[in-house]
Image 1 (cartoon, rainbow, N blue to C red):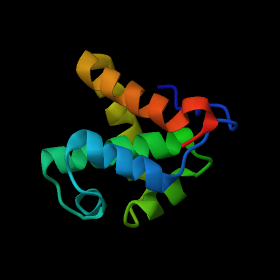
Image 2: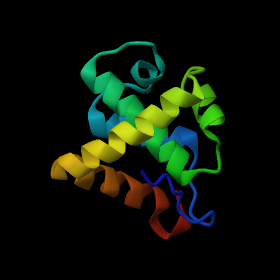
Image 3: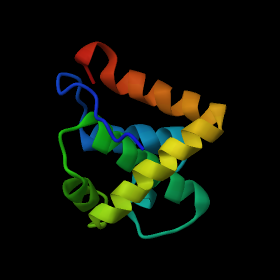
Length: 109
């Protein structure tokens, strides 16, 4: 599993990533940050963690802190889970790529 991040020149913020994941998966930002475990809520949170880890300079520990004090291992699991989902489902892959493009477009957010 390759956990490479994008160039440090291309960044976003956890807040913007949270908003984008919320909008794409149809759950509120509050629901993503809560401890709930419904499927849409959980996957939106995992996508947020994946993108936050990938598009920021935050460590897994700090990504976890942003997402309601979750453990760094939870962030690593989310990254792995999203990468697998992207490989298995072209629709998920396209959605996440579109979010990423939107967040990194021309270096502006």
